[in-house]
Length: 148
Image 1 (cartoon, rainbow, N blue to C red):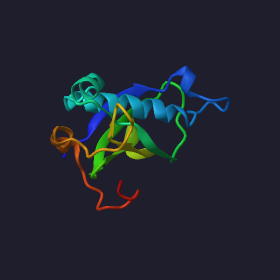
Image 2: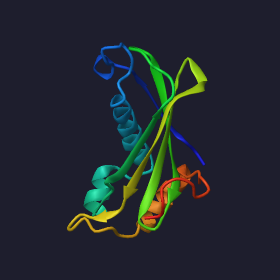
Image 3: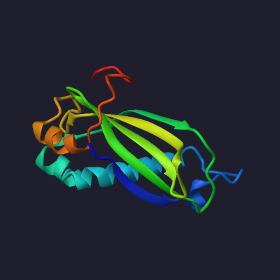
Image 4: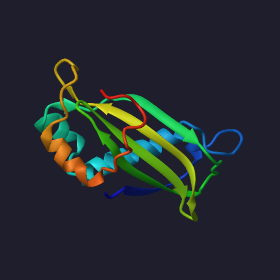
Protein backbone atom coordinates (compact mmCIF):
# COMPACT_ATOMS: atom_id res chain seq x y z
CA UNK A 1 0.00 0.00 0.00
CA UNK A 2 1.12 3.47 -0.79
CA UNK A 3 -0.43 6.70 0.44
CA UNK A 4 -0.46 9.61 -1.95
CA UNK A 5 0.87 12.90 -0.54
CA UNK A 6 0.45 16.51 -1.49
CA UNK A 7 1.76 19.64 0.19
CA UNK A 8 -0.29 22.82 0.30
CA UNK A 9 -0.06 26.09 2.19
CA UNK A 10 -2.88 27.48 4.28
CA UNK A 11 -3.85 30.53 2.25
CA UNK A 12 -5.61 33.77 3.12
CA UNK A 13 -8.96 32.47 1.85
CA UNK A 14 -8.59 29.37 4.10
CA UNK A 15 -8.67 31.23 7.42
CA UNK A 16 -11.52 32.68 9.43
CA UNK A 17 -11.89 35.76 11.65
CA UNK A 18 -10.13 33.92 14.51
CA UNK A 19 -7.04 33.58 12.32
CA UNK A 20 -7.19 29.79 12.07
CA UNK A 21 -8.11 27.48 9.23
CA UNK A 22 -11.82 27.44 8.45
CA UNK A 23 -13.32 23.94 8.47
CA UNK A 24 -14.42 24.33 4.82
CA UNK A 25 -10.81 24.75 3.70
CA UNK A 26 -10.11 21.10 4.46
CA UNK A 27 -12.50 20.17 1.66
CA UNK A 28 -10.25 22.12 -0.74
CA UNK A 29 -7.22 20.21 0.55
CA UNK A 30 -9.07 16.89 0.23
CA UNK A 31 -10.21 17.70 -3.32
CA UNK A 32 -6.64 18.52 -4.39
CA UNK A 33 -5.35 15.26 -2.93
CA UNK A 34 -8.21 13.29 -4.54
CA UNK A 35 -7.63 14.73 -8.01
CA UNK A 36 -3.87 14.18 -7.89
CA UNK A 37 -4.17 10.66 -6.47
CA UNK A 38 -6.60 9.70 -9.25
CA UNK A 39 -4.30 11.28 -11.84
CA UNK A 40 -1.30 9.34 -10.48
CA UNK A 41 -3.32 6.12 -10.77
CA UNK A 42 -4.11 6.90 -14.42
CA UNK A 43 -7.71 7.77 -13.60
CA UNK A 44 -7.95 11.47 -14.34
CA UNK A 45 -11.46 12.82 -14.60
CA UNK A 46 -11.39 12.90 -18.38
CA UNK A 47 -10.58 9.14 -18.49
CA UNK A 48 -13.36 8.35 -16.01
CA UNK A 49 -15.90 10.44 -17.90
CA UNK A 50 -14.97 9.93 -21.56
CA UNK A 51 -13.50 6.41 -21.60
CA UNK A 52 -15.27 4.59 -18.77
CA UNK A 53 -18.49 6.64 -18.90
CA UNK A 54 -18.80 6.90 -15.13
CA UNK A 55 -18.94 9.55 -12.43
CA UNK A 56 -17.69 9.12 -8.87
CA UNK A 57 -19.90 11.55 -6.91
CA UNK A 58 -19.32 12.01 -3.19
CA UNK A 59 -22.26 10.70 -1.20
CA UNK A 60 -20.67 11.21 2.21
CA UNK A 61 -18.05 13.68 3.42
CA UNK A 62 -16.51 13.48 6.90
CA UNK A 63 -13.88 15.63 8.58
CA UNK A 64 -12.53 15.61 12.12
CA UNK A 65 -10.65 18.69 13.30
CA UNK A 66 -7.87 17.89 15.76
CA UNK A 67 -5.65 21.00 16.06
CA UNK A 68 -5.90 24.62 14.91
CA UNK A 69 -3.78 25.58 11.90
CA UNK A 70 -2.76 29.13 10.95
CA UNK A 71 -2.07 31.17 7.83
CA UNK A 72 1.00 30.17 5.78
CA UNK A 73 1.57 26.86 7.53
CA UNK A 74 2.60 24.15 5.07
CA UNK A 75 0.39 21.09 5.40
CA UNK A 76 0.90 17.55 4.15
CA UNK A 77 -2.25 15.72 3.06
CA UNK A 78 -2.06 11.95 2.72
CA UNK A 79 -4.79 10.16 0.77
CA UNK A 80 -5.51 6.47 0.32
CA UNK A 81 -8.41 4.10 -0.27
CA UNK A 82 -9.54 2.22 2.82
CA UNK A 83 -12.21 0.20 1.04
CA UNK A 84 -13.28 -0.72 -2.45
CA UNK A 85 -16.81 -2.09 -2.21
CA UNK A 86 -19.19 -3.33 -4.87
CA UNK A 87 -20.36 0.14 -5.99
CA UNK A 88 -18.49 2.48 -3.67
CA UNK A 89 -14.99 3.38 -2.53
CA UNK A 90 -13.80 5.00 0.69
CA UNK A 91 -11.12 7.64 0.22
CA UNK A 92 -9.40 8.59 3.48
CA UNK A 93 -7.27 11.61 4.37
CA UNK A 94 -4.83 12.61 7.11
CA UNK A 95 -3.49 16.15 7.41
CA UNK A 96 -0.32 17.12 9.27
CA UNK A 97 1.93 20.14 9.46
CA UNK A 98 5.13 19.56 7.48
CA UNK A 99 7.06 20.91 10.48
CA UNK A 100 5.55 18.36 12.90
CA UNK A 101 4.70 15.21 10.96
CA UNK A 102 3.84 13.17 14.06
CA UNK A 103 0.75 15.26 14.85
CA UNK A 104 -2.50 14.84 12.87
CA UNK A 105 -4.34 18.17 12.62
CA UNK A 106 -7.35 16.80 10.72
CA UNK A 107 -8.57 13.63 9.08
CA UNK A 108 -11.47 12.79 6.85
CA UNK A 109 -13.20 10.41 4.51
CA UNK A 110 -15.15 10.59 1.28
CA UNK A 111 -17.49 7.84 0.20
CA UNK A 112 -17.63 7.87 -3.60
CA UNK A 113 -20.18 5.87 -5.58
CA UNK A 114 -19.65 4.60 -9.11
CA UNK A 115 -22.60 5.73 -11.24
CA UNK A 116 -23.48 5.72 -14.94
CA UNK A 117 -23.32 9.17 -16.45
CA UNK A 118 -26.60 8.77 -18.32
CA UNK A 119 -28.88 8.23 -15.32
CA UNK A 120 -26.72 8.43 -12.17
CA UNK A 121 -27.66 4.87 -11.24
CA UNK A 122 -25.08 3.03 -9.11
CA UNK A 123 -23.05 0.45 -10.98
CA UNK A 124 -20.27 -1.90 -9.89
CA UNK A 125 -16.87 -0.25 -9.61
CA UNK A 126 -15.25 -1.10 -12.98
CA UNK A 127 -12.42 -3.68 -12.87
CA UNK A 128 -10.11 -1.12 -14.49
CA UNK A 129 -10.75 1.29 -11.60
CA UNK A 130 -10.26 -1.46 -9.00
CA UNK A 131 -6.96 -2.47 -10.56
CA UNK A 132 -5.61 1.08 -10.76
CA UNK A 133 -6.66 1.97 -7.21
CA UNK A 134 -5.21 -1.19 -5.66
CA UNK A 135 -1.78 0.45 -5.25
CA UNK A 136 -3.38 2.97 -2.87
CA UNK A 137 -5.50 0.50 -0.88
CA UNK A 138 -5.07 0.17 2.88
CA UNK A 139 -8.11 -1.70 4.11
CA UNK A 140 -9.69 -0.54 7.37
CA UNK A 141 -11.13 -3.87 8.43
CA UNK A 142 -14.70 -3.01 7.43
CA UNK A 143 -15.17 -0.21 9.95
CA UNK A 144 -16.90 3.00 9.03
CA UNK A 145 -19.73 3.49 6.60
CA UNK A 146 -21.87 0.51 5.58
CA UNK A 147 -21.45 -1.21 2.22
CA UNK A 148 -22.90 0.44 -0.81
